[in-house]
Length: 98
Image (cartoon, rainbow, N blue to C red):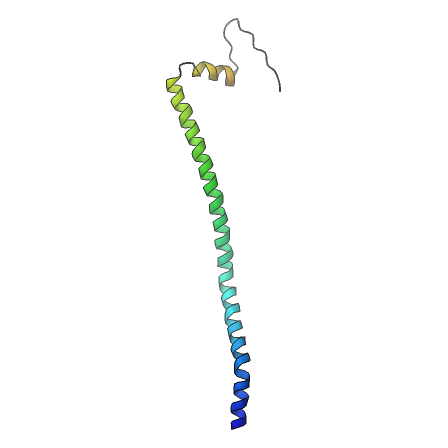
Protein backbone atom coordinates (compact mmCIF):
# COMPACT_ATOMS: atom_id res chain seq x y z
CA UNK A 1 0.00 0.00 0.00
CA UNK A 2 2.80 2.40 0.84
CA UNK A 3 4.30 1.72 -2.57
CA UNK A 4 1.09 2.73 -4.34
CA UNK A 5 0.84 5.98 -2.37
CA UNK A 6 4.39 6.77 -3.27
CA UNK A 7 3.64 6.07 -6.92
CA UNK A 8 0.59 8.42 -6.97
CA UNK A 9 2.57 11.28 -5.43
CA UNK A 10 5.19 10.88 -8.13
CA UNK A 11 2.64 11.41 -10.91
CA UNK A 12 0.66 14.22 -9.29
CA UNK A 13 2.91 17.07 -10.47
CA UNK A 14 3.17 16.02 -14.13
CA UNK A 15 -0.58 15.33 -14.25
CA UNK A 16 -1.28 18.71 -12.70
CA UNK A 17 0.98 20.36 -15.29
CA UNK A 18 -0.75 18.52 -18.12
CA UNK A 19 -4.19 19.46 -16.75
CA UNK A 20 -3.21 23.12 -16.48
CA UNK A 21 -1.78 22.98 -20.01
CA UNK A 22 -4.99 21.48 -21.40
CA UNK A 23 -7.06 24.16 -19.65
CA UNK A 24 -4.83 26.95 -20.97
CA UNK A 25 -4.95 25.56 -24.51
CA UNK A 26 -8.75 25.24 -24.29
CA UNK A 27 -9.07 28.83 -23.11
CA UNK A 28 -6.76 30.01 -25.90
CA UNK A 29 -8.75 28.11 -28.54
CA UNK A 30 -12.02 29.53 -27.24
CA UNK A 31 -10.93 33.17 -26.80
CA UNK A 32 -8.32 33.64 -29.56
CA UNK A 33 -10.87 34.23 -32.36
CA UNK A 34 -12.57 36.86 -30.18
CA UNK A 35 -9.21 38.52 -29.52
CA UNK A 36 -8.49 38.69 -33.26
CA UNK A 37 -11.97 40.10 -33.91
CA UNK A 38 -11.51 42.75 -31.20
CA UNK A 39 -8.15 43.71 -32.68
CA UNK A 40 -9.69 44.08 -36.16
CA UNK A 41 -12.57 46.14 -34.76
CA UNK A 42 -10.15 48.45 -32.96
CA UNK A 43 -8.24 49.02 -36.20
CA UNK A 44 -11.51 49.72 -38.03
CA UNK A 45 -12.53 52.09 -35.24
CA UNK A 46 -9.25 53.99 -35.55
CA UNK A 47 -9.65 54.24 -39.33
CA UNK A 48 -13.23 55.45 -39.03
CA UNK A 49 -12.29 57.98 -36.33
CA UNK A 50 -9.65 59.51 -38.59
CA UNK A 51 -12.14 59.57 -41.46
CA UNK A 52 -14.67 61.33 -39.21
CA UNK A 53 -12.08 63.99 -38.35
CA UNK A 54 -11.31 64.47 -42.06
CA UNK A 55 -14.99 64.76 -42.95
CA UNK A 56 -15.64 67.21 -40.09
CA UNK A 57 -12.85 69.43 -41.47
CA UNK A 58 -14.41 69.17 -44.92
CA UNK A 59 -17.83 70.12 -43.53
CA UNK A 60 -16.32 73.10 -41.70
CA UNK A 61 -14.64 74.19 -44.95
CA UNK A 62 -17.95 73.97 -46.85
CA UNK A 63 -19.74 75.89 -44.09
CA UNK A 64 -17.07 78.59 -44.27
CA UNK A 65 -17.51 78.79 -48.05
CA UNK A 66 -21.27 78.95 -47.63
CA UNK A 67 -20.95 81.81 -45.15
CA UNK A 68 -18.62 83.59 -47.58
CA UNK A 69 -21.28 83.33 -50.28
CA UNK A 70 -23.56 85.48 -48.15
CA UNK A 71 -20.93 88.06 -47.18
CA UNK A 72 -18.77 88.44 -50.33
CA UNK A 73 -20.61 90.12 -53.24
CA UNK A 74 -17.86 89.21 -55.74
CA UNK A 75 -17.74 85.52 -54.92
CA UNK A 76 -20.23 84.62 -57.67
CA UNK A 77 -18.04 86.31 -60.26
CA UNK A 78 -14.94 84.56 -58.93
CA UNK A 79 -16.69 81.16 -59.05
CA UNK A 80 -17.93 81.81 -62.58
CA UNK A 81 -14.46 82.82 -63.74
CA UNK A 82 -12.39 80.15 -61.94
CA UNK A 83 -14.62 77.12 -62.13
CA UNK A 84 -16.79 77.75 -65.16
CA UNK A 85 -14.36 79.69 -67.35
CA UNK A 86 -16.79 82.56 -67.93
CA UNK A 87 -15.30 85.82 -69.20
CA UNK A 88 -16.61 89.36 -69.26
CA UNK A 89 -17.65 91.01 -72.48
CA UNK A 90 -14.63 92.05 -74.61
CA UNK A 91 -12.31 89.99 -72.39
CA UNK A 92 -9.85 87.47 -73.82
CA UNK A 93 -9.28 84.27 -71.88
CA UNK A 94 -5.88 82.63 -72.22
CA UNK A 95 -5.62 79.05 -70.98
CA UNK A 96 -2.13 78.12 -69.78
CA UNK A 97 -1.52 74.47 -69.08
CA UNK A 98 0.80 73.62 -66.22
